[in-house]
Length: 155
Image (cartoon, rainbow, N blue to C red; front, top):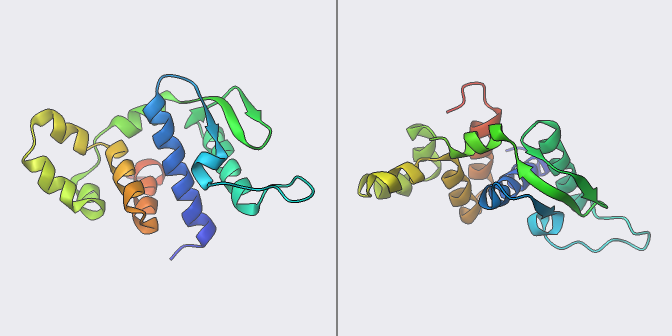
């Protein structure tokens, strides 16, 4: 099992990219609280470790070329964020059957009985992101994010 901060990182990445995909191609403000949950700064105005880890994950996504933004809104949000072409294409592309079977086995059965356009939608990386976020399983979220963006043999 990975360290908890790594599991949180994968969850934050999945949620942020899913939100941006849902708004694509519009630029939107990407709020840390919408991803990591509410945060109450301390008496010195400093955010919690969890809030700052999520904010750091968003900045890292931009540094790695998966999203663009115009500015930060303090340490609370990215202003006018949008997916890059590479991230949009990757999320829209079909995932391997092996990945789909390992993280969403029911989706394969459902897709087999569905019309071709629905089968195509069920096979995309973004569909797997949505399904694993809904499941709440940290290990599944981690697996999908790693397979989609961070593995050498992108499924």
